[in-house]
Image (cartoon, rainbow over all chains, first blue to last red; front, side, top):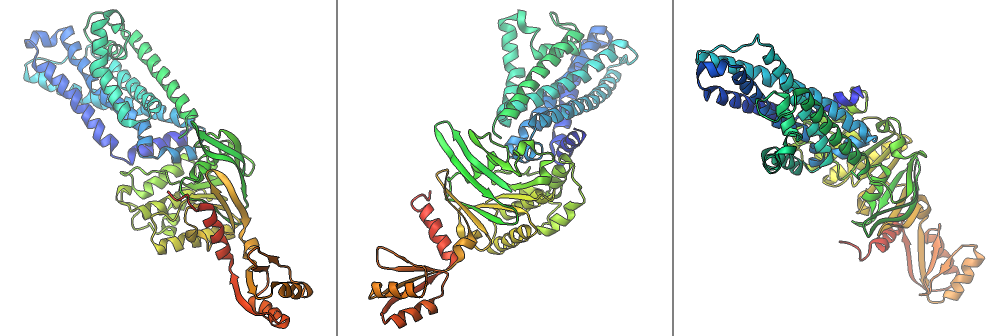
Length: 244
Length: 294
């Protein structure tokens, strides 16, 4: 199994995927953080507990890119026809998906670290320009940071699962983007009662976004993890049974 | 050794392979021949565990591919559908497979050399020609030094020199005792190298034979007095077959001997010809594929 995860890591390293998507995720998160800092109502708002939470929650914006990365880790094999070769090497295909899920989690976590570090830097820089101080010593900040890392990790896993389930890469990416950009918002507006149980809302709960009606951060983690497991199991089933 | 037993694979209402059985022994190059769409690739996909057979089985040394431990060490395959990530270099493609299969990466350089890709090894596969991809696929198949090789149309995209090079490789591998199965829709590409042929059409077996059995050259003779010739052949104890059109076919003798018998019998020879094994094979292949080229 270690060989398989190492091989998946080698696959990722030997293409330009990371070089393309991680900076995009960082840039997206940093832009969201900067936007929130710059639109704040003065120093008081910036330094308030809610203000800090709002800024930190924006670090989750890049998680969507991490999810796309996860999708490409699995569906990309079908796009370029490398799946056959992969399954020739490892005919017990559930092992391939398991290795990809493990790699996805590791890469998601690492991406989270990079994103959070960059966002922390930007936030502290802009706070300084605005004449405020970013409260790095605040325990709330570190709880949200932990949340952001969990968020990117789970989103990467979700992406790998989705990519195994919907093997057409373009379709899988489109499904993911459509869900988080349109479908979930629409569902929340139509039926606010179920909104908190949907994956993006679970993600918002994890990064402690100051919004009404969200689950607690831990419940958010459990819910998003449950979505991840469900999609991963379905993805494994598809990979193991369908003709490659 | 590869054994295919009553293999059937249907896609919806379409029967891609139907009750197909054949064997490919070790130490021989088995040509798996048939026109495009005959079911060759589907058979390979079932053999390699990429597609689930609807019925029957395809076994490698008695086991299904999915049950092999360390399959890359047992069998190497080049499939037409095998893809490469265009952004990955040739060397990295081999490193990935080697890593996933837990193989010795030190073979990579030697294999790149063998397939003539050493200079291009660190270029992205996206810039490779079709022939270079075929060569990279062959190197990947050989990574685990397997005893069984399954190659789907390996000559596709290769120039004549490349085709000759592949034939030489196949010969070497078979002579080393490996089982080599090579599919082609063009007999000419493989005719010189195959020891055994399995010809299929519309997913069913048309012919399975060792080329050695075909090679016994066949002489055809026509004379003005067939009856005299037949009795002369009988008294010379030459086995023969009289065709409805009056031609007499004789296996395993040369034309000079048959001409001599005709002279002694005092008949006038109107035709005396010899067909080589290659021609016999070609006639068989043509009969199988006639009218089905798409």
